[in-house]
Amino acid sequence: MSDFLSVPFYDLLAEESHVPRIRETLPPVLEGVRRSILEIGAGTGLITMSLAEWTPAEIFALEPSAGMRGVLLSRLSGRPDLLERVTVLPCDALSVDLDGEPVEAVVMINVMYALEPGYRKRLWPVLASHLEPGGLLVFTWRGGGGAPAPRPLRELHSRQVGRHTYTVSSEIVESTEEAFKGRYLYRVTQGDRVVSEEEIVGHGYRPTWETLREELAGAGFVQSDAPEGLLALRLQA
Image (cartoon, rainbow, N blue to C red; front, side, top):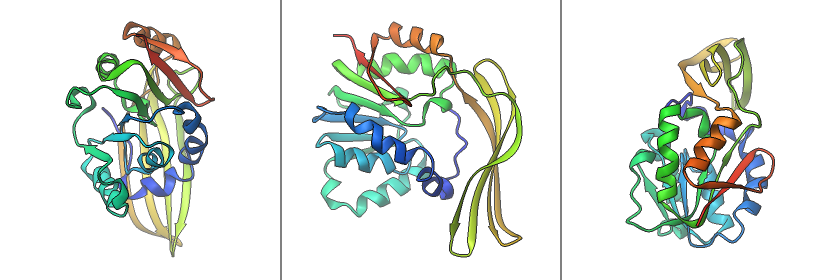
C-alpha cells in the first residue's frame, strides 16, 4: 500500500476537503446497519467517530499507521462512551481477524488510491469473507477512474493555525492508465519564513470503472444505489 499523508496535517486538511461531504452522503447509505462495521483505513478517526454517532453498531477501525492510530486512540480516550464499542486494529487489511464474526458493512473512505492493483484484487475476496450475505461494501469513488495526467506543483489546501500557515502542494510526476507517481510538499510557514517542510513521493492508483467492476463482480459483489462520490455494493447471498 502507498500513502502520501503527513500525520500533523491530516485533520487540518481533511476537514476542508472530503470529510464534510462524507458526513452528508454516507449516513443514508448505512441506514439499517446496527450490529457491526469494519472500517478499512480509519486514519485519525474523523469518520470513525461519525460512524459511532450515526449507528449503534460495534466498529472495528483498522489503521496500519502507528501515527494515525495514535491520534485515533487519543480521540477515543475523550469519549469513554465509545471505548467498549470501537476496537482499533493495527493490522494490514489482508490479515484482519474478526474472531469469525461477519460484519454488516465495510467502509473505506479515501483509501482506494493507496491500493496497488495486485493488492486490491486480493482485498475484495478478503472483505467478502468478512461480510455477512447481503452485507454492504461502500467506498469513495471518482466516476470514470483512470490516473490523472502529469501536472506541475500546485497548492491544494492551506489552513491558518495561530501565526503559522499549513500548506500542502502536489505535482503529478508521471502517470500510466491506472498508476501515477506523485510528489507532495507539506510546508509550515510564518510570513515568509519556512518553519518546517516535508516532501513525500510515492505512487497512487485509480482503476478504470471497467477494471473495478470486473474485480468486484468476481468477488461476489453487486452494485447498489449510492450518492455521487460513493460506490455501494452488496455481497450476493
